[in-house]
Image (cartoon, rainbow, N blue to C red):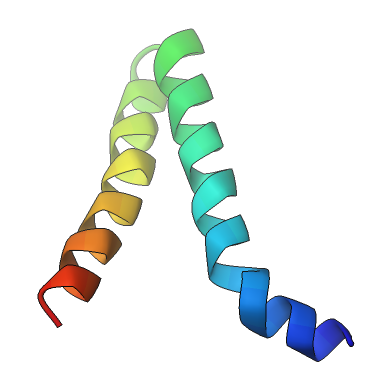
Length: 54
């Protein structure tokens, strides 16, 4: 059961956590936190574009 759950929901959960981290760090942080926010928000966008053109 666990293997099936992670196989189905692993990537969406990873992208969700990455997006939430990016939004919170960009809104609440300064300096390096803004950079980490941008990077963590660009990764899901890059993966979506990569999957679209695949």
